[in-house]
Length: 376
Figure 1 (tube, rainbow, N blue to C red):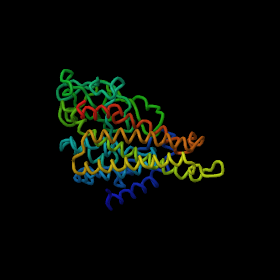
Figure 2: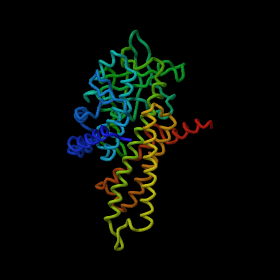
Figure 3: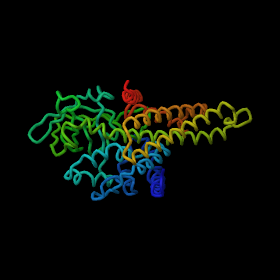
Figure 4: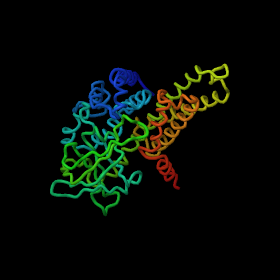
């Protein structure tokens, strides 16, 4: 699946983590935010912008295997990392595929250099999975849009310089009434709310965003007016595959560390992994992880062939995230009392993994999407 150039990037990602992340991880976790300098450093290592056009400083590669390599290495390390999957897999593609030439000149160089951190604002206090329930709206005023509303659970909400806001611009048009507006951090009326206190992922800055009569120039419409919903549907499969990749890679690392633990930890005069029940648990998890890894490879092949469907991505997303939850829960149990101690990574993995079945589309929404495809 991976070739020499992908493995070279894998080694680069490991070096970045060792040199630029590990020395600061405790501080970032304590302060509940990753320092902005980490994004600039990541760009210097070539971990941001490799899939952006070359004329704006990017690498010009749309090979999603590079995305997968970075996601895997970051997931193996843990969640005290800059949100590069958001930059590369989730939000970046909106800018690289929907922006016009003038917008690309304005925005892409900063994104590629890591100096411009991006976010996307979909979820609202009263609208999560049901995007049709979005109330944030914008009305035309000359060449500008006047934006009002609130968003919540926004990843990189504190750090972001540019935020793609999903906005209702035609209340009577249903799914055809949404437009993507790009809001700059310095626009008057744009404020950050709380940096949300989450159960897990403490270093990831998730926040509320508020827009009060924000004047957004029409030059900041991303894509086509009234086509916002369709732009979202086009980009969601790659986001969901990205989440699935991280889920499996993270769970595999938790399993690997647990394997070593059950070999070293002794009870009743023998390693706890030698007891039949525990041996069976580890065997089952290993098997299920390998099956998930094979499906991920199949999805990556489909991406390379431009054939990945929304249904295939939904299958990967729900199955791999639910499996990660199962694996980590079993590994906590195998650690016994130590699995409840935060000094052990498995305890932190337990709370960090839990959100994966929710963000990017809940397990239930994924199953509904698949079921509808079956004609049900």
